[in-house]
Image (cartoon, rainbow, N blue to C red; front, top):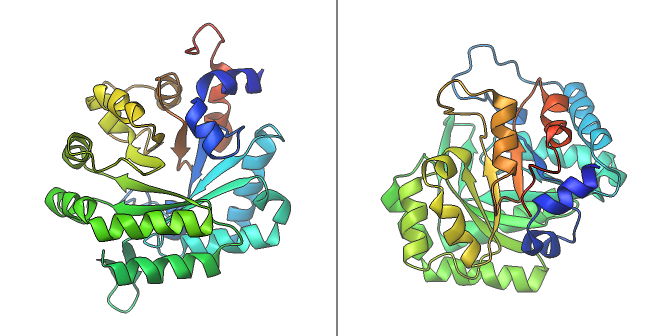
Length: 282
């Protein structure tokens, strides 16, 4: 039943792009490396044992022939290294994973702050670091977060040299490239200016889709896979978080919804089972 639902949920483009059978719930790793949600007073840095148990459970809960998107970033402090350690320890899990990381934002431990750099040189250095770090790499995003202004985000998207270098990496290393954008103004303007054409995937926060439903149709027209993050942040009207995730999965054009849930992984993945076939879009 799960795979029937998944076949209805996924877009033809994304499933073909990433080899098929991509499970619609992906794993976000922000909390592997630092407090999430931001300023969480109850956050405790996870042990290696907790992360291993968490990730093993995730793969036990999904169909064996499904692949799972594992999303991380250089800017998530220790998260990408810890994910890499797990994948190297569990090659069978690695083979069932779609590994995505991001460049443009990093953490400076000496200064204890996030540093943003979007030069071609930084792109090259970050990509080479990721190739060495991970046993496999499937998606490489430009990471445009709220750490930079919306105007600066659009400026990066307009940078032809950066885009061309990403497209060269796509061809030379057989990967998929995309953009992860946290600002709705930047997304809307990038679409209007045709700046996203040529990429494979876009990642945006779920609140953008809720606020601007027409964005999905515009993204779909240019053939991008769509990954949503932060599905239960900024919910209005006290909507049940699990219902909110289920409703996102029913939207046309959504390929994967990332969960960053530390304590409700099983319930989140089982949202798929709660969707009746009569609800699923064709």
